[in-house]
Length: 299
Ligand code: ATP
Image 1 (cartoon, rainbow, N blue to C red):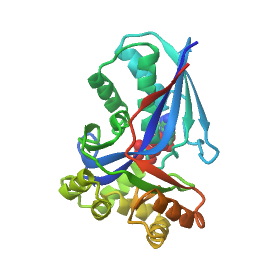
Image 2: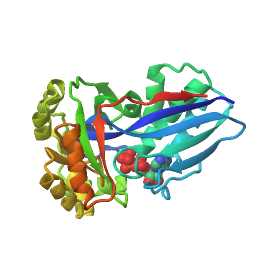
Image 3: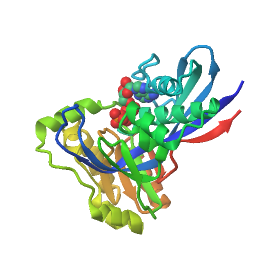
């Protein structure tokens, strides 16, 4: 029996500009995504009925991950089959290393990985445009998980286009024990903010194109930081600890609660990681940008 495994990365937002809520309930975004070296692997094999299993790294709490039809990986599989008018099913196994509800779009990574894996398993040769359209139906962050690298996201985040990125960036990632609900953070944002039309700052795009670390540190920003901090005031201490440890800048990842710290290089990231690991249990160094969803095994 053929099994195909696809690896898909976590995303961070170097800029997350959020506009006033639209009539369809979504917020318009102007964001800059970057894929970082933290991955979920999704394996698919032919089966008579759909099934899903989640295996997790011991540090990951998968209690909140549904294994029924609401799991976004299963939704992805069914959507791809329906798109091709296929009455086929598959068994899906997710190996999770991206924390759940961490603001790193782990579920979106699983959805993107499933689309690609099943396209290859069933030899469907779905066009890139169709795959991106199916991904956008599944969630705002799913197209970027297919594309990877560094990209601007507009619309509700689902319209992605790659941007020049000459940097080799190192991030220290501090995970939280408890997740933060993305809808709850947006509700808090709506309550707090007078949102303006979002735009991506030119200075950030220039910093990426130049691979200039200091300039990048000076131009990252996140409109969801304030509402995430309002719901989780403890994150202010994490950000302060990162600054004290010598990071170039600190940033909340997406809707949080994961915190990110930009470092000079791999050695600096290792040093910042060591310092933060004295107080925090789950601290990792990750390189960026990395590839989007890609096949890692065909057995
Ligand atoms: P967002 O993309 O909303 O920023 P996030 O990165 O904060 O999300 P995810 O781990 O992607 O968080 O998942 C958010 C919620 O989606 C989970 O709490 C869970 O209930 C649900 N979910 C559905 N399918 C999955 C999946 N394959 N992996 C993780 N969560 C999933």
